[in-house]
Length: 237
Image 1 (spheres, one colour):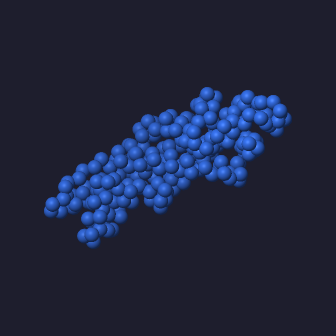
Image 2 (cartoon, one colour):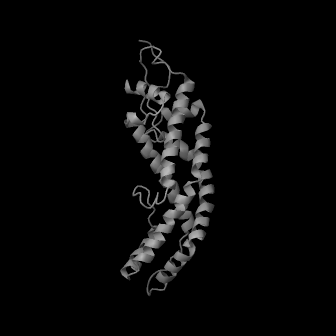
Image 3 (tube, one colour):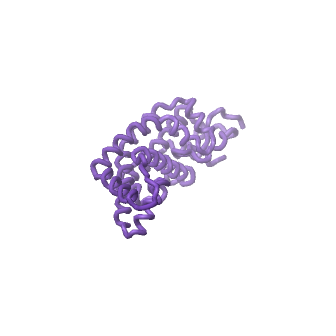
């Protein structure tokens, strides 16, 4: 058996959660040999599929609000506002405030896919090797390093616009004003646009990690001949 100096290992969808070691001692055969280009294309295809699948989920109605993995809760300083309002029988008002935060994130994530796809398309083979040979968060870390700045710049104005559109600013102004008028409480004045932008980013990467875990463990998610060929080699480890 000859060592094949190729980076053949599991392509961990978007987060490549357990990118272990390369396959060193596979028998040489037409089925076993993959070129660097094929390996790179396989990784890019897996990343692209995961992005499309999971980002689309988040952009659907209640994509954040009804997904417990990414649902945006209130920042710490507003949790006391929420509790106090509910204690005063104003639970519906508190629910309304929470929903508009999640709706804004939903609107913003519609801007994410082109940024992710550009990052994947521009991966060099050095990038591919780094991801494939990295730790279990290598792909997520790569995408975060390449896209977070651009995503924030896209998300933030969309979230602000969404707040304006649904009257979130007024809703939260009323909520906070009502809370701040309660005797003996400390006034709060959080930057909700920045907070929701950061939480939307967390949600996107959380769902990419979920999808990546699936393709590593589930043969049914290898939806093309190239993915099947690459992952078959990984299965022989």
